[in-house]
Image 1 (cartoon, rainbow, N blue to C red):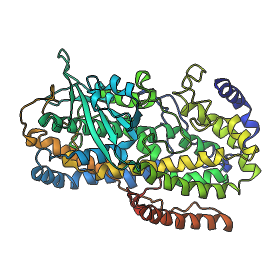
Image 2 (cartoon, one colour):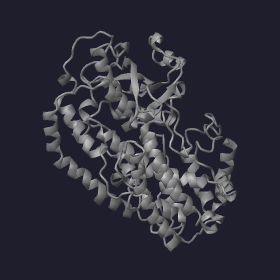
Image 3 (cartoon, rainbow, N blue to C red):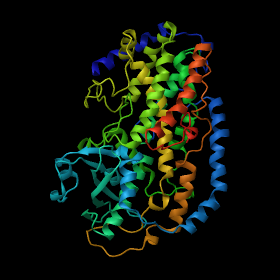
Image 4 (cartoon, rainbow, N blue to C red):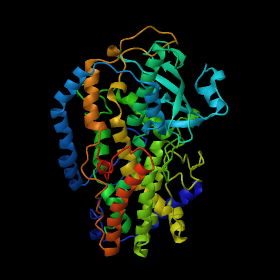
Length: 530
């Protein structure tokens, strides 16, 4: 497949023979945005030169909203911090629900006996039942952030035993905790079990904190930044009349400006400059950057937990949790819509799709093609990478469904995938979800009592609450449930109307099936807006 990618790139010089050279055919007169090397973090390309129209819309709809929230929500966050000192008790059932059923379930993988022995050193294998299924949540990414300024960090590896066939009930079996000490200090290591009292209670908070960091600063970024290249190229290479552009355009608004601001602004939460009151996590910008690295480059020694980023043609979750099934229902509805829209694709539309894929694929497949080699075997699996020009054109010429799956996944990523993570994480109980810890992680199974009010300070809670409001909880500008694609023909307009009806029916079906409705339909944004 590496050879296939190179052949695709060789055809780029011939793309101008295919595409219109009339500037009036394109959104920005063929002067639209384009990806370029990322000078700050070489994990994904940057899109720096943005159209003035888009920058203005972003300022009025989103940038001003951040300013309003920073001003007017500050007293609310202060009041919350006053009323909620420290952390509240966290039950084993709530831990399992957050980590195994809700959005954190994306981190789990089915563990073999050897996985348990390797990644939970010291685990008592007499507790292991070969007739049961076990899942691991590995939060090794926290190693990038050392303890500092009275704030403590630990890596954790949690083990859960599946209790039912529906992936809804799990039993915590143990948490391996290893501190990430300040420079010059020795790390502590402990295997903690549910019967270990104070040590277990403390270990649970560290596990949840690792999950919070992973979803905010690591895996969630794969929904944002790799799509910037696709966003820019789609707007610049496809004519305004192209049906694929019309289908994707409502889902591409705001995200280029948002992602550039997040990456480059001094006031960005990922910089964590403490002069801004909404910076409520531990670590410097360089340390936090390591969390992004793990999500995109992967960790070769822990590939089950940390594979390199690759574009999947459908939602992927080894745990097949309730959260997965919630998201899958919407994926299926989007596919049904895209499938019918693509029946209206004209030969003129199709001729642009090879160049479109050819330009995008090298950017998105960056971490799975190394020196032209398919080192992870993902380029040979058509569902595990962004298709090349040759793959895409060959497939739709043979009446395949690769294009349909590709467009479905793009829309899903920018709507359900992104908004669902934000909403579910934002709805988790903040009083049990630390972003900073002021008591060291357990160094043994037997530790003295600790005061939960001292697990975090008043200012830690205030900063966390303000950051939660500004950056974690959704604040929508435009919504999926009433999306209008601006189609020109009555047939396509009817498909648009039917899609909106099907979205409503999907939410109803989720509830009727007994699947938890992790996010109300009317709160799902139609693009990445936060």
